[in-house]
Image (cartoon, rainbow, N blue to C red; front, side):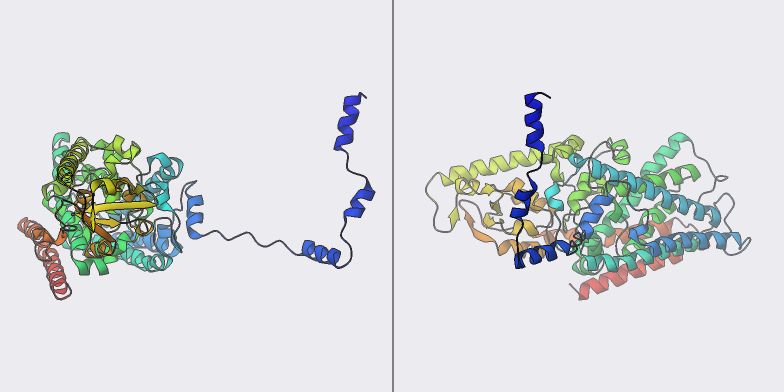
Length: 532
């Protein structure tokens, strides 16, 4: 053995036993130490719901509807019931018209749609988990809040949502059976009319624009009419950080009327043949899930296939819409961006701030952001020229002073000529801290007004006032209610017009269907009138 090896072994050997013994505590101290050693280790800290969900996202997420075994049983039980009704009722009330699909085929289609939804949802959530660089909201915006899930919903909201999910699934079955009863030819069958490929494409596009038109106005009503927001549509927006699992989690009546105003009305006005009808069903599932996926990338297959359409919208547009109660980007479809543009509610969202969104931004997004930047630069130049005439009076803030407050721990913004300190509020902001960080230290009037904020948001902003912007008219944030179309009667008028179009088709069953929709619109208008 060499000297080096011997010295190494000696260094690695334990110290003599005597030295260990002399280091042991004696008396009461020894007993106390032995008792602590014998005490069982404390249990590992229980994971929060948010943390469990983050772990689940690392593999394909749960296939249960809303994470509920009961709701999943209801979902497939409804489909089985529809199949049984169709199988045991030959020649009865639910007999399809020649060339139309039977209730059994409808039940099988609904089952296939449910299974496809599971698979595509798992795919999108897998992308969200494995590709954080494609997230439309920074990870800091998804920080765990007290007793919240990964999408920002409180636990009590999740518990009540289970009931709405269950009712949605039941009403889904009711609508399917009702349409077969009212219009035996509603669901196209394989033996029915078959259009040419050119006609299929044209019909599908017009069908989508019809579908999006009525849903646009129903969706807009849910935001701008206070009673509808508070009691119906606001439930869906409890998820301020969208994830595809929340796509169909809303108030059951919201889902039910959307199914009528969307697919049902569009199929009556612009009927699709068997092949195109089912292609559209699956395309709509993909679009809806992608809209809520929280990511913006080439993995959003359905939207990227349609980005060539005029004013097409991508998932990042609807993601912005979910940040609280943003009154913009109401459309449910890539093609539906046309209606947002036509009625002044199409906004670029995070196209100027987030790298993955910049890559997915459409030409119109880029034009919007460039125009906004030019407008802001011109306004700031005019203000700077006005401020050069002299110093700021008491309570006035110059652009130079405003620009110094542009750090995460010191954020001021100007809206409508009024300066606000949003530093402490940033953590509570429904759209996340990063949205405010991006505009800190400058005039954010257009950014604030463009997305449309509620009266509550304006009241919060008012409480954060620190002064006025020197040389600017101190008007404060624009009142979103100034739009004619945001009145509780005006916003329902286009839906009523579409009800008239559906009635004018003379298709079987449209009279009771349109009568029901008219009654709902009248009731909504009256309730909203007396509950402003």
